[in-house]
Amino acid sequence: MSPWFFGYLGAAGGVDGAFDLLETTVLSSNGEVYFTGLDAYSDYKHLQLRFTGAASTSGMQFTFNNDLTDKYMTSRLKGVGSNTIVNEREAALRNTIRFDGAFVGNTNFPNYFAGGVIDILDYSSANKKTTVRGIFGNSTGSGVMLGMGFYDVASAVTALTIYSSSGSPKAGSRFSLYGIRG
Amino acid sequence: MATPTYTLLDSRTLSSNVASLDFTSISQDFTDLVLTAVPLASTNGFVYLRPNNESSPYDIVSMEATEGSQASYTTGSWPFISAGANYYNTSSEPRAHEYHIFNYSSSTQYKSYIGKAGGTGAGTGGITMAVGHWQSFQAVTSLRIFADGTLLAGSTFNLYGIES
Image (cartoon, rainbow over all chains, first blue to last red; front, side):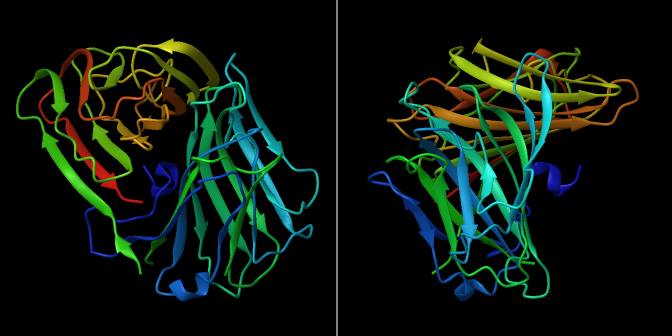
């Protein structure tokens, strides 16, 4: 079984420092989440974001390098119950990567936060465009998903900003960024 | 400053068949738990995970693919954590399982989890993944693992803690 399927690349239990916590943010009030200065972590090959998130709606969105122009593509393989599996792809490049269902839209589910794991691969490469993958979802209506994202710019990722599709991630949401050596 | 954080908490390889396996006194010094397992069971059926040996309430939505078919299931009254709602372990083939339990020590949030499993046996192979919640404010201090039938010798279980 490949590490891709399992959603992590860290050598758990292996060499010290192969999978390290870089930064974590727990929101004390609703708001967007910013990780900046990621070029300081050039010792690492990949980034992993582990999170538990909620917002007024379930859509998680994110951008790189504060770039909010239409340079992002997203596809999602989604199981939503009732024997339904769908493959969704954005019709065109958008201004964010869109992982619908990665949060709990918790207006009606106040104690629920959705857990997820997103890998940002080879994030410091300036020679190829950045790809991400994630496994996430919720049992409050969105389903379970494999997501793929693509940033149509060949540059190192130095900043990550996390939004929700409506409003902001809610207080209590937690976002932890890890570095994985390659 | 980076912090090394993926820590092995406990590792078990069964030397004999058992009805269940318990990880107890789980450290509360971490934020997420990860369980990797290759369980063998005497009977084809589910592998069950129960935090604090609580039998309810859990909810789950899963996406499962077996040879020639795929399906998705959801339920709001699942009595355990699993990697699928219609995904069965087999007695004849080791299958790889992995579970993430997020914010496991939180007293203010229900616990969300991700489960994944897969195997390649002819006629029985398949892949599943699931997300769900344990609707509880209890901190996870123990984890019981069992299966339909008994867990067989040779089954392996590794529990990790991830700091945040």
